Image (cartoon, rainbow, N blue to C red; front, side, top):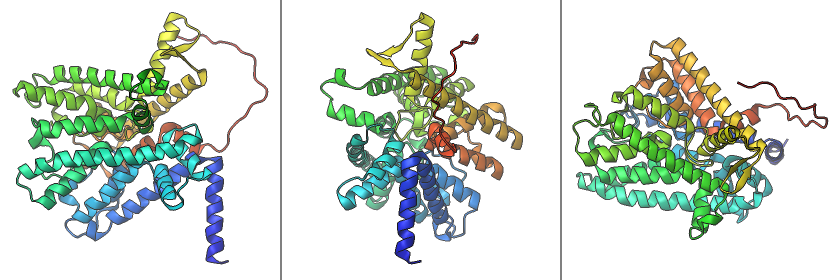
Length: 456
């Protein structure tokens, strides 16, 4: 059998999977990228000490990078060499684009058009239902990513120069932090982390703005850019995303600011403007980015609990954020309100939300909660840590946030594998994971008689 025949067979197999189960192919490609990044991080060249990294640490870091999470078992700045950090940056960028979106970008560059198979793959990754929109969405991904990351880098590089860093070091740190911020990755390669910038608006504002832009989702970015002058014509998805994200960010800012205002280990004793800055950062970082200027492990348990809820909700669909997504949360709230009022339909902004969408929202939330609950039980079994820190770490992994109370490096290997699997599942999406693992779809012609059981 010739090589050309093998390649054609492989292409046909990929096309078949793409047409019949694009979600399953998305999982396979994501897993392949994680495997490549793991292999590269396992090279002695990737470690600063010049020794091969343990497999569990290489795998965990690779998953965290590709899934744009930011949880780490080793210090990103001290453990990995420049080569290793470049590999991480590549993994972060691929994870931010989305593997399926990246495949369409490459196809567009080569053939100047996007084929049907690639459109189906990208539609699966970006949650685009109309295949004709995929080309525009891919271009929006590229333009938004490059423009925002470039602007963030241009803002951050001068800040690092003022700290006495050379041009090369400042440029590298600025570019790495720009990509980490916009992709909500949470990785930091600065020797002292972000602690020295606790009162630095020059660092804090880019984190706030860049995180929010990356977390609302590319479909929202595309529509806002196209119809910035006519907000009333925005789709229901865009309106729900912006309103819900904004409301949760504002509420989190106020609540965490109040909880930590007098905490001597975080905000207590700091000037008013520094308290405001860190409250604003906390309002967005617990949704997706995981970049914090203060020590999360020193926060009060009330702040942890609130951040648990915020991380679980996450950011916008088809964004660099994880969680069950703000639109899922909004639909669930609207369904509850409709039921409480006795309304037959779930409505928002003059539009009716179908029952299939409500069922999908319930499924996503339930599957997410099941994953979090299962992982929490497993970690409680293999470690001696208390429930509050374990569930915080678990939700942070599932929602690909990256905030940590500091227990991840101390987990046994079995615990690290649990969090790695949870990060992968969180990034690929609960519904995508379920669809990829399903053996078949059921299409019922005959429907059973309707009957309503007693609820509550």
